[in-house]
Image 1 (cartoon, rainbow, N blue to C red):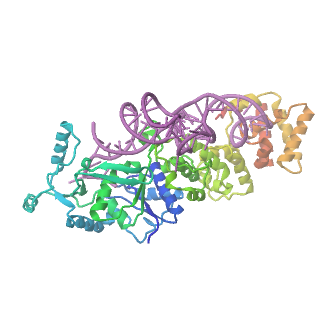
Image 2: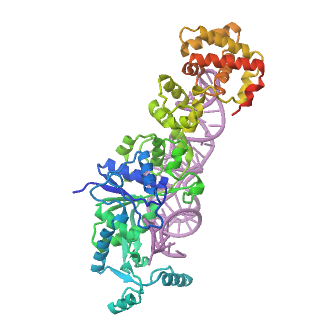
Image 3: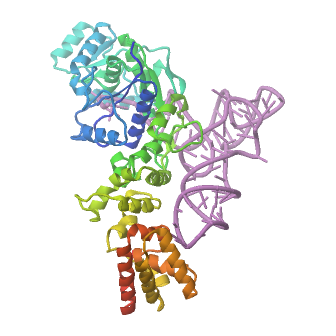
Length: 495
RNA sequence: GGCUCUAUCGUCUAGAGGCCUAGGACGCCGCCCUCUCACGGCGGAAACAGCGGUUCGAAUCCGCUUAGGGCUACCA
């Protein structure tokens, strides 16, 4: 007895689409939740659409999201091969079986004849269906067409009356009139099986118990059910998850912005955030929790909690989620994520090792960042003396005659401190402010802008502690000097 | 066109006949916290597509309409 077996079966036509990623996630969670097996299978029967490197990109996207498969490319398995192009003998056997059972027949119509027939029917206001030209050919007629050198395809003989009900775990019973279906092709003239045939053969051969896939396949379900029936296979449980639509309610495509998982990675989105966001697109955890780690997702996942209606994709919430993960995940983890970004920005050397001070800085910076590139900017003044000055900030808090001296006084006091801690720094700032008869903010704000170039950021005293005494003092003095020499110097480098 | 799925705030959604003067989250707007920003807290604006039924009672059930999606290939 096999337990739950599910599969994700993308065709390698390019990148991993977020809709596909969500389907994969649901399959993965379903398998894990039920202690089952998650299979990755590549549907590459259309060689003209198969793209070089696409399988690798899809695998990498899945791995990045933390979706791992138990059988499939790169890992193997007992039900292989996992590429349809390598399973041709299996299809040939199934095709031969279909012919033997009398449920399939060769059709010699050319694509041109078919197109003409379709057009004729459409003009007559009817739904285009295969007219059954070759359905009842005698063996002489077949032989004659073979002799003419006509190439044959194989069609499935579909009953012309009655109805077929497909049970869907998400939608319930879906009923189709057989009269609306026609004898569809199961083997192309190049010998390859068509999608609707190959999926069934593979799902059966791989003992798939639950077919969880996108809603775009719902209309294929009756055809596939017919193939199952024709071949005498047992039907799996179907579950069609709603599609993800673009904000204009059309199918999500490139012109709507990012649609590939890898693009989100390149935008500085963490896999935890994308995975979490994708889960919530069409799935309700049941309580009011929204931020869920993989373990919680596995524990909670259930097909009955998958929604029926399509979700419109809106990345505002994704960005918010990303900011939450940025500040919640272990700081070491965040460092591993930003590290390549910091290196690319020239703020971190490839051989450089992080220390406690770096982690403190990261801790302060990450609370304010929504994405990895934002985090890089929030880290810039910690890692480099070359940080941009915000023009408005300079004008507002630095460009005043009394500021230079105050900055120097702050620097003096800082140098006198026995220990450089946030607490001590705050004490001395407040004391100095008292002595000067000023509100503390008149010292705090100029210091912040001088040391970071910006008016926004972490609590100043923690900021200074994380920055370190030497850089703090050096920056205060440098800025004071520049203010004295020429105030406009500072406002040149604006952000 | 035919077949089919879907329909609650701008978006993701809760809601499986009375608990709904429809709840939460993102976003937006105020206020609080405060050295700024962010976080956090508090509050606000914001929805049951329409019309008919069924019922004592409907966001919830049924029908129709409307709108959107999918399929309708020798693509997957």
